[in-house]
Length: 275
Ligand code: SAM
Image 1 (cartoon, rainbow, N blue to C red):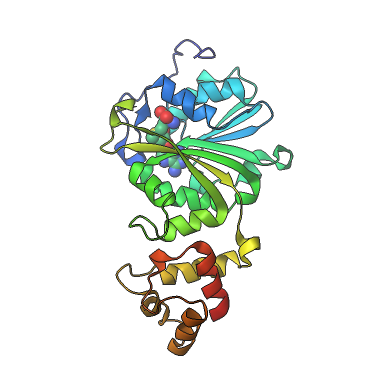
Image 2 (image 1 turned 180 degrees about the vertical axis):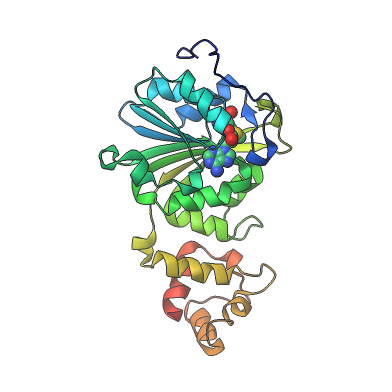
């Protein structure tokens, strides 16, 4: 790392990752480069890094981004990074819980739409994604590492086992690409799972689907509530049975169809018809 300062007397080092904070540090430099490459040209971008840890991505980002803000919850790791990057004027290290961070407050109004990157702690993947989607108007692009199985759910097609509420929620806000997969050996300590790097281009669909985001997500939650139940049985908790039957018939859908078989456009049509 070109900007790394010599080890400081006040510096502290935590040698083993804290499992409860999802601390599996990337130790494969070519993977780090490919993740940062996934963000494209950063020369005019503000980048938010989630969970910089020991800085595997941070040093590359610091070299390429116009402005980098890295949010790390671990006090020791945050302090070490503050020392490492003290002389980098374009880098700010914040000690905070990403789930409590407001992007607008963090970046200020002049930042425009930012890029987000992170080898994130897997135990809060969904929470982080929902937190970012709730602030999607401030984001252009997200490149994140997730557990391979979660990547499969996020990129799943209707009618597959992986397709569900998470897929539809993500699709409402973004177009998603699976960039590449990493084996446990790319990390220290190695996790017990494979990891995939995803790129999410923020592209909200609520306008073209003509839905209110909160109402539509509440509807989808109900539609996908019980995987083994048909859509009809899930929806009848909130809607009159006769209306559900009429809606399915008018959309030429089978009465025993499951939510897992429906594209987001079809779910939006059912929602519109029942509302
Ligand atoms: N980015 C580094 C790398 O690639 O080696 C570290 C990745 S490690 C999988 C996840 C990092 O996220 C850890 O440094 C952990 O302390 C941090 N972290 C965990 N929960 C967090 C939270 N709620 N907010 C911010 N950082 C968090």
